[in-house]
Image 1 (cartoon, one colour):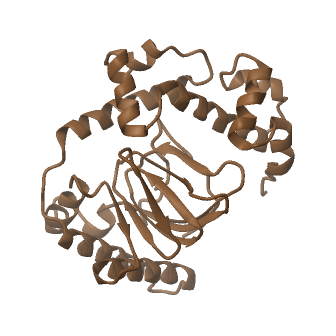
Image 2 (image 1 turned 90 degrees about the horizontal axis):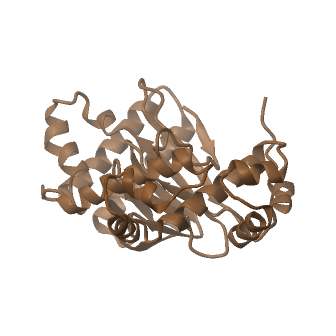
Amino acid sequence: MKLYINRKVITGPGKMEVVLNNPAFPVVFHYNDFGKYIKEAQWHWHFGIEISYVIKGELDMDVGYGREYVRKGEGLFINSDVLHTMYSATSDHCALLTIVFDPRFVAGDDRSLLECKYVQPLLHHKNARRLIFRRDGGWHSDVLRSMMEAYFAYFEGGFFSEMKIRNELANIVSVIAAQLEGEMPDRAELADDSRVKAMLTFIEQHYDRQVTLEEIAASASVSISECCRCFKKSLGTTPFSYLKGVRITMAAQLLESTDKPVTEICFATGFQGISYFGKQFREATGLSPREYRRKNRRVESK
């Protein structure tokens, strides 16, 4: 098992985050400190269930229908395949410990009783896209306690650590499932999610060139007006604002990890002019591209 520190959102096809690459133990632990400049995780989704515990500052989290504040000492649950983003809610840093795990890790075989009775109803529950665990006692405290026990088992290691982690994750799933009755998911929300994911996939694949609104809409087989409605409802932004954010994020990553000239990075990420690129980058990060590179230059470990 490996702890990923300040891990950036690494995506595969579209914006599906690539995190679970060990089928023998499909659990990933990581620590993120949303810093002073690029303070947010891109909109993304992943197959694994995500649970996080805030250890510093305040987190602002959004799954497409309103922001939710998560404070120090509180936790959150993000369901499988749910679009989400998160960022520091204040000017200070926000740090959190996160576990992402394959739901089948706690249920076993896809046809098992545990899978059918507990895991599948949870994955498809319309009120379980995201959950916040407050410090107010009751079942929230049970979940927070199991989260910390799983972290402790990871950090302490030992022969039985994997079993302890699985037991705590299974307890989290069972406690949450006990609070939720098996309501069916909202079909309209599922349709919107599918469309938005298709459009985010298109943007991810074509951000480095000129993109039209018609092309974004066509990638999900919807009209321009429906495209804009889906973005506004699900992400709270416009298609072009989201596209600009992707370009800024990709440019920041290139500035950190390569020696490419700023002008080359500008055009490689879809911007059509160095002056406009510099202005938009400064608005997003508070720094010029060159200043950002000096402060955030990444030294690759060998």
